[in-house]
Image (cartoon, rainbow, N blue to C red):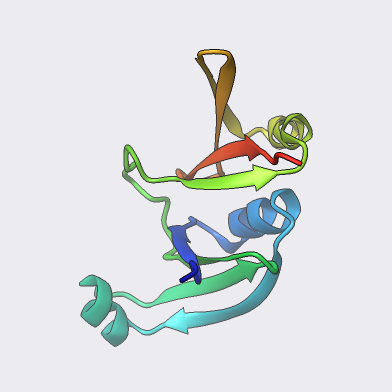
Length: 128
């Protein structure tokens, strides 16, 4: 079994492109529209919504763009990304003005980044 994709929300395509393409370096695979009748059946939301699928050879993220800023932070919901150079990645995030939270844990640190909306990403250093 493998994870096919994760789904997150963004307030705009510009925010999504800036984070998923520019910072995460994922490619935009396709864009489409979730029609309101299907959104109602799946999510109990009677509204049309744009969708953008970003990905690379390892995973995909389906980003819902409902045209509004998400209003609620889910306290435990996050994606964990493994990067080759965590400090360089965090520097890129800082330069983009993203919120970074570094939490000491014993001899190590847990690193979390929020995107331009409210999505939370844990950032791990890849082990060679």
